[in-house]
Image 1 (cartoon, rainbow, N blue to C red):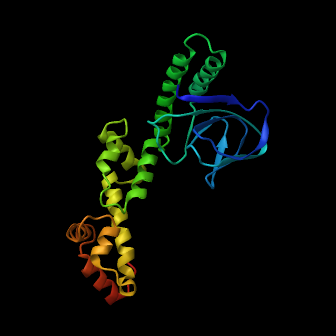
Image 2 (image 1 turned 45 degrees about the vertical axis):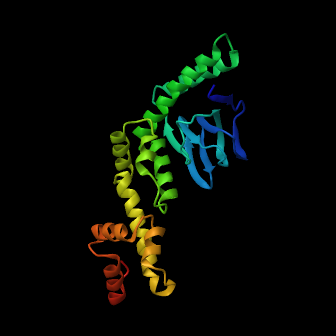
Image 3 (image 1 turned 60 degrees about the vertical axis):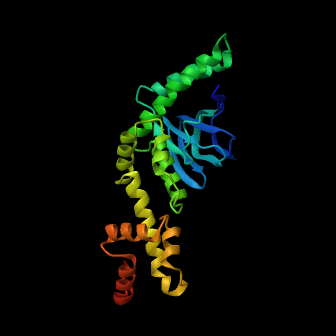
Length: 252
């Protein structure tokens, strides 16, 4: 069963101490408003907001007035984002209604309750994707951005494989990614690699690092490929760009 625990904060409160969980946690704010601190980032919450927090990430809640929340922790390999995401329930509170039903079945533990709870979770999971997508914060896109940033300096990083692991069509992933970042996953990765190379070129006269080392550090498998991509994006080869930078003293 993917669900590990389900609970309600029975008493309204103004503060929940910093803590983390071994599993991903979903928090639904039933009433009140305040601010969560998740991995050091401050995130406001209001009634009807839902926040999904990755395993191991410390978080706490603060409010100037009382707030009330419910939660569940779960383990789901499909939801592999390493960053939190937030979305909001519908006006009809469809997410909350299903969550209440899942809570009841989990605690009643009637015959076949595990299959019932898993089925209800799958419905909630689809709402997670749909509602977060509507607000421009699809968890798969957030996870892919995180994965690209983590691996941008690795020449062996397989972006196509990372995209294919997402349980959506590749074209849909690219479109959601474009809506979020303004570029495709490949453009996003290449742009970050080029900017990293520029940073190294700016100080090459001091560092003495070779072009081959810059190429590899920026995530390109060869100096030739690096030079070709760099010229495509900037209109100049790396050496031309560096020479122009030194000549003009401009901050490009």
